[in-house]
Structures are given as structure tokens and as C-alpha cells.
Length: 166
Image (cartoon, rainbow, N blue to C red; front, side, top):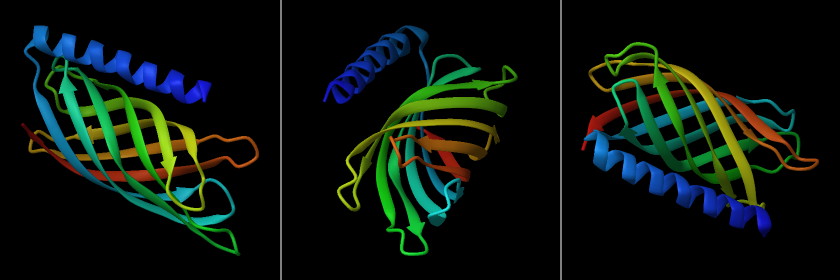
């Protein structure tokens, strides 16, 4: 319960910083819709598939704050049950040039709310490298980790998305 309270407090702090930064920087907000496919890093699952919605608040042309949710499903194999979760994460995205497109690095963290087999809530982290085109297409490679004592789950995934300004 303490961990969940800390996560909620951290998310609230990020939201306050986000909205106060947005109002002063005249930033742009974008909505991205993505499809994710991945190879699990544990032996019990065959592959992972999911979709996401991402709000991206541009602090500057090079720095953005993404807030992401969606659904991801790990398909079990060899009598290991499937695992599905709804992510709620926020982070930072930094472009390598000042155009607001091109190569970037990103890191997000938050919570994964299990929706299969009463799995509960897990910490979630996701670093990625990608490329965003000025027409809205975005392709990235990510690692997504969901650590839990005795039952770590993770994936190396590919995200294909399309984003547009709101």
C-alpha cells in the first residue's frame, strides 16, 4: 500500500510540474496511437502484443513529457498463464536535434495494473530509442520491465505509432 501511495504522489507531482511548465512554455500537445509487439525476456511467455495512447506535452522542440496508457498482453506457453496489464506511465523524451523530429531517447516509469489472474499492481519502467518523422510516424525499440519478487516479466518490443497535434 505504501508503494501505491508513493506512485500516486509521484504521478500527481509530475502532473503539477507538467501543467505548470506547459502554460509558461506555450507548448504543443500531441496524441499518439501505437501498436506494440515484443519478445518476452522470460521463458514462460511466447510473445507480447499491445496498443497504447500517448499524450506528449512538448516542453521545447527537443524535450517532451509523454504520458502513456493502453493494454499489453503476454501470451503464455507451456502451461504458463497469460498476463495482461494496463500501463499508466510518464517520462521524458529527448530529441537529438532541435527540429522536434528525428532520433530520440525516452524513459518512462509508472504502474502496470494486472487484469489477468488477479496479478495486482507492479512497478513498470520502459527506456526506448526511436525515430519520429515530421509527418507523425514514430518507430521505436524499447525494453519494458515489470519487476516483482520471484516473477519478473519483461519484453524487448517494437512500437509503431502515429501522432497528431491537438
